[in-house]
Image (cartoon, rainbow over all chains, first blue to last red; front, side, top):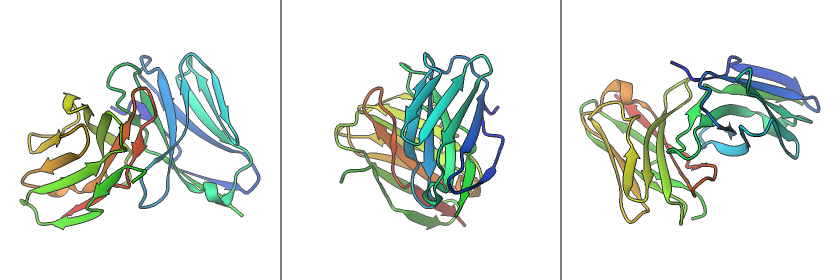
Length: 113
Length: 112
C-alpha cells in the first residue's frame, strides 16, 4: 500500500523554465512533508519542507505547495538549472511520533541546457 | 566528519552469509534511522533509534534483520543468512529532534 505516490517517473525541462514535481498522499494524518534530492551513488539531500499548518513554503528557487484537501503537494523550481538534474523524492511523516519518513518512488528531473 | 558516514560503501556476498553494515551519525544527533532502497523504488523505513533504544522496529522485514546502537552514536545493521531479495542500498540517517534527517551515502549490498 503506497501511502506516498509520485506518479511521474521522469520529467524533462528546458534550462531557465519552471520545473513542477508532484506528489500525492493517502494518509490524512501526515502533518509534515519534505522534498529530498538525490544524485547517483549519493544519499538523499534535504531540500525543503512544509508543515501541514501552512500551504506554501519558499526557499530561494524552491517553493513547496501543500493542498491538504486534495492530499497533494508540489515542488516548484524556478528557474531550473542543469545542476538541478537529479531524482527528487517526496516524503511524509507524523510529527511527534518516531518521525520516520514515508517516501514516494521518486521523479527523475532532467534539465536540458 | 561533518556528515553521516556509512561503511562499507559496497558489499558483495554469497547467499546465506551474514553481513554487518555500519553507520556513524552526525555528532549530537540523538535520532538515527535505517532505510532500504531497492532498485527502482523509494526508500523503505526499517528501524528508528532514539539514543540507544529502538522504539520503532516496525520496518524490519524479517527476524534475519537486527540493529543496535551504542554510546548514542554508532549503529550496526546485521542481516543473517542473506537472501537475494536483500540486495539493495541500505541508507542511514540521523537528526536532532524535530529537524530534517541527514542521510549518508549508503551501503550497496549485492547478494550473489
